[in-house]
Length: 190
Image (tube, rainbow, N blue to C red; front, top):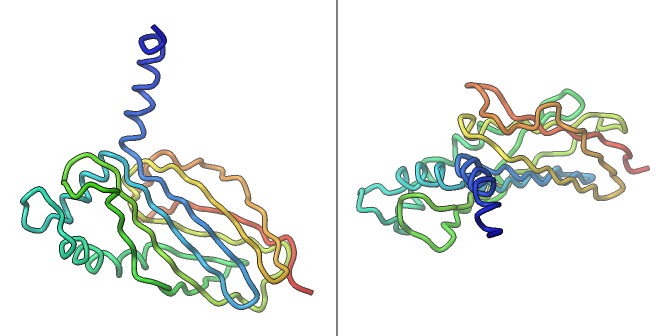
C-alpha cells in the first residue's frame, strides 16, 4: 500500500534526475595554490549519450581503450569550459591530473550512471584579500539539467564562505552560459 501511495511522486523524482548531471565542486584555497576538483555524475539519459560517444566501434560495450580515447579527445575541451575568478581577476587553471572516468561497474552503452572526475590548480593571487569573491564558472554540459553542490576548504589561515546561488542551476543553461559557484574569502593569513 505504501509503495502505491508514494509511487508516482517517487517515479517523478527519479525521472527528473535521469535527465541530470550532478556538478560537485570542491575548492581549496591555500597560501600558494587554489585546487579545484570537479566530480560529475551522469544519470541515465546523459550517461547513455556519453556512453554512445565512448563506444567507438558501436558494439554496445565500452572497452578500456575506448574510454581512454574518449578522455583524450574530451580533456582539452574540458579545461576550456572551466574558469576561475578571484577578486574579479581571472586565474589560470592547469590540469593537475588526467581526467578519471568511472563507469560504475557497467561497460554497456545505454542508460546507466557514470562519474567523471577532473582536477585543476592555479596560483593563489598575492592580492587575495578578505571580502574578495571567488567564482567558479562551469560551462560543462550546459544542455543538461544540473544538480549543484559546492564545498569549500581554507588552508594556511584562509577562511571561506559560500555565497548562496541566485539560480540553483537545475535548468539547462544556454550556449556559452556558465553555472556560477560563488564564494567569499573571509580571512587571509596574517
